[in-house]
Length: 178
Image (tube, rainbow, N blue to C red; front, side, top):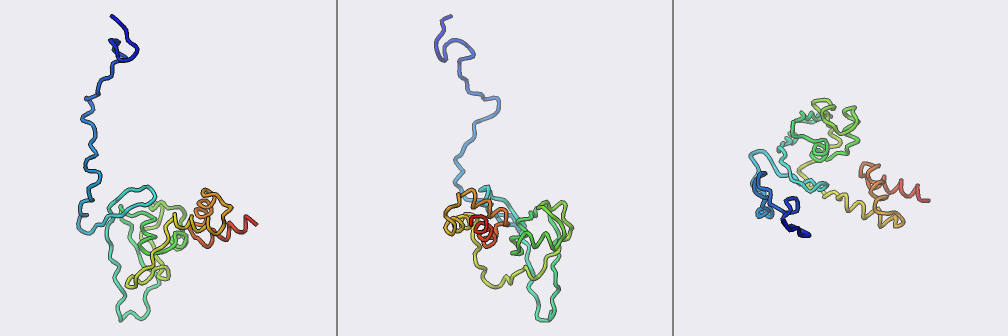
């Protein structure tokens, strides 16, 4: 048997296509649009990990004219598809306020009380057009523009430590960099 440098007659040098695991993946449909969501569901794009997920659509009933003194709190029954961040976005409230109102820490809803208590002061009127909140990237850029001596990772760290509160992050960064 003659030997060759690469891929000759030696069996450990011969490259074969491994077919016992099934056909190779096809990426032909990767640019197709998402299918329409099932009834009472909607597609949510997670900016952080660039993935799409289905989320149940829950309608918040507007207050009627007869309710002169609305309840101070809304009860939100936790669904298996709920996430802590999703609930904060739905009710347009700061994660710290939601944790404080329900007396729990972290973002694990398995450890949170069910139903969650949502203070009405944190809930904005959904009939008014909402001002689009700044994305995390936009907040990082604003911190870097205001305090140019910071690195990108430092700006992100200040924002993460302040729960992405831009004003608080700027105050902390200015105080630390005096």
